[in-house]
Image (cartoon, rainbow, N blue to C red; front, side, top):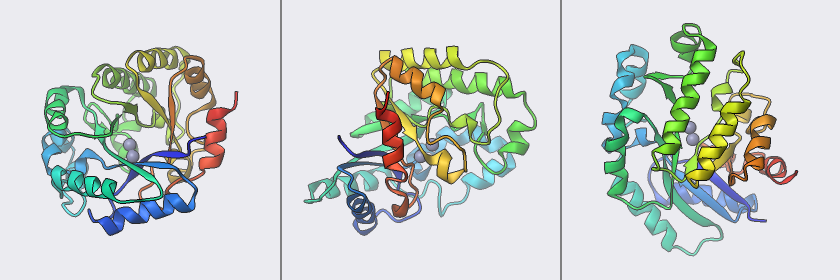
Length: 265
Ligand SMILES: [Zn+2]
Ligand SMILES: [Zn+2]
């Protein structure tokens, strides 16, 4: 079995070899064969234009204007660093990509930027619903307490479908992370999950079994919900374990248990 962690972030550290090697070492300690390193597009100067719509809300504007975290590096510096890492003789195979905050209005802009570079993989993620982030401490006030939960879920999955249909990505980030606060819709999600599975298969994309919600937000599911996991397996969608580590210590978090869920029938 290939032990692979498909999703980890460098964002809390500098773009240096020493820092990347901490992730490699952590992966080696956990017995991993391969890691996929990425960062959110909001780390990079080039992507600032695609976050314009979020700035309508002051709290999101403040979040984006924190220059110690956001839009602080050039994409080329990241890619050069990762290419240097790949030239090294390491015990773990390292691939690099991006986690793109996908917004359909900016499809062309995103395409222009990512087409100028080469990546081993590209992860697409929905992090906002029509200009409002759904997973932040301020999201309850801005989104969840203000809008109908069924509408939020409908819109989230519509955006996920558009992300898949954009054909820009090889991997879908945390497909059902909209559940992170354990707020659920009143309608049956199975038809939505079947449509998502059909689209993922058609567009040759992997789906993540991302355990970030489990250990970072205290959600009881060890990654995908049982229902969604079952449907993705039924449609033979390729799945990839993802720790969503934001620091080296979390590389391969709960991987054994999470891999078991992916592999058992
Ligand atoms: Zn994400
Ligand atoms: Zn992530």
